[in-house]
Image (cartoon, rainbow, N blue to C red):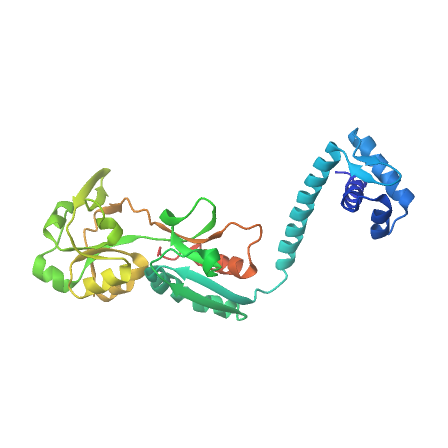
Length: 305
C-alpha cells in the first residue's frame, strides 16, 4: 500500500470521526485546505464519494460509512499488534492465577512452577486445584490446565504436556490376587476407576499387534481424581490406571508395579494437557510466559507426563 494512500486514509478517518474538516485539521496540525486536498485525492483514488459536504455539516455516504468501519477495525488491530510487540521488551510481572484438577495440579504443574519462578521472579503464581471445571472469567482465573476432552470450541488452548497411562497395582495386592497378564484377566481383579469411567458398562481397552481388545472391569472403588486412586492402589486396594505424572515415582521406587507391559492402553480422551483461557485479542504477558515455559520443557525431550 502506498504511503500517500495510507496517510489519506488516516486523514479521512479523522474527518469522519470529527464530522468536520476544520476540527480534523486542528487535531492533525494541518491546514483546512491540506485536509480537503487529501480527502478529494482519496475519493479520486477510490472512484467514490465518501462525504457529503455543506456549509454547515459533513455526513458520510454509504461508501464512507463502510470505509470508516473498516478503518476502525484496522487501527484497532494495528494497536493490538504494536502493544504485543512492545510486550516483548517488557518483563512479565504481576499475579498469575491458575486452576487445574487435583492430579494435574499436584503432580504435573506444581513441580514445574519453581523453575518458572526462578526465571520470572516478579510473577506471583496462585495455583488452585479442584475437580470442578472452573468458569475462568467469572472466577478470576487467568489460565486453566485441562485435558483435551474438556476444552470448549471458543477457548484458546496450547498443548503443554503429553500424558502416558499406566496400568498398575501394588506388590502386596499382586501377592494376594495374582498378576494379570491378559486383558481378560482383569475381570477377576478388584479395579479402581475414575468416576467417569464407571458411568456406563466400564471397560478398559488395550491393543497388541494391531488387535484391540476390550476388558470389562468391575468398579470396586470409584473416585473423582487420580490422587485418590493412587493412594488406594498404594494401600493394596487393587488395579488402577494412572497417568505417568502421577505414578512414575512410585513405579521407580517399586511401590507400584506396571502391569501387562506388552499391551498398549487405548481410547483415552486425556492424552494431552492443554493450557486454556477464553478467547481474547491479547494474551497477558504472564500467561504467555507460563505457556512458553511449559512448552519449552515439553520440547526438551523429557518423558511424557
